[in-house]
Image (tube, rainbow, N blue to C red; front, top):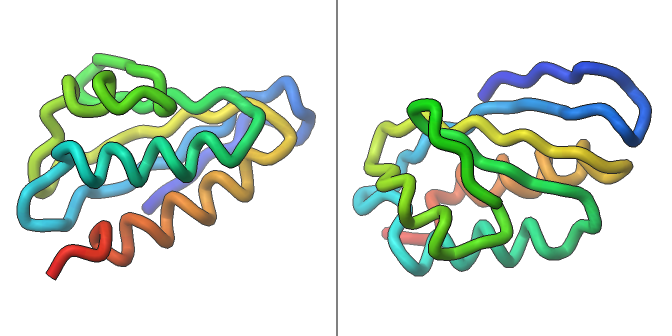
Length: 100
């Protein structure tokens, strides 16, 4: 994981990357888990892969990224709770979406 914060105020866009490490990539269940985490926060969450950016609060958008195992996703978050979003997303990805 890497991160880059553009500034410290709530109008800033924070950026961090996570690698998909589960066997099946981002299919419906992991996409729903990402959306569940993103929706706990009031700020904006965008997810980018290969220059395609989708709303991180949209299951269909996330599935359209076709993020298979090894894909690197870049998260762009905006809002006062960006650090919490990064922490929770990092934990979700580290657990490989609770898949065995």
